[in-house]
Image (cartoon, helix red, strand yellow):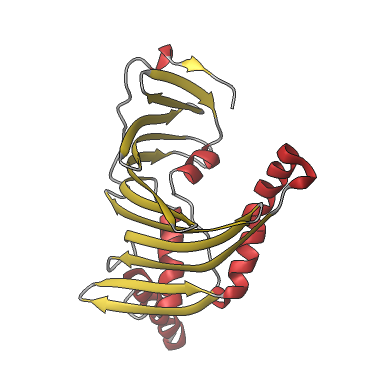
Length: 256
């Protein structure tokens, strides 16, 4: 009986420390936060991203801001509303997007179209999916605590970056090769990838940041791309419904 009670008490203590993130190390915090994020059914999020392309002493900046609301009902069904403002060299372009009933509705510059699209593709496009790393993938991994909040900081190893570029871009390179033929001369590498995840005492992610640098050579032209993405998250599992525009039925259908 005493042994049973001791085991039960130990189990309770383990669950409590896991839930509150109090005694976890950096990788445990990372794992727990990512796992809890997968189980979130609804949220609101603000995303700010910048991309800077540098080549031959010239720099081309692109910035994007997104405000997102989403309610997930299953792995294939969700409601999402998103407003995106892209700014290319000082020219802002705003697009309103809605996903419901398996269709992505887009309104921009007076044009309204709808396209059948899998939920997985939509989530990828709005930044809701990021690479999931194992402990061996990190070059550095640390955690800072302040009161009841935690910030995990990491840098991905060179070996993992090599694998990432192979996995992420092999399809893209293949498609470009089909378009331009055997003359395609392209080399791409990810030279750095780091991140930061802030979470509350229960390991719920409140913000995260990704910074990545890519170097590429295309048809003999060398260039560098710096990518920075920061997202702030709130209202997790508290949003129940999204109000969509009343004219979605009037959007013109297009093939993907």
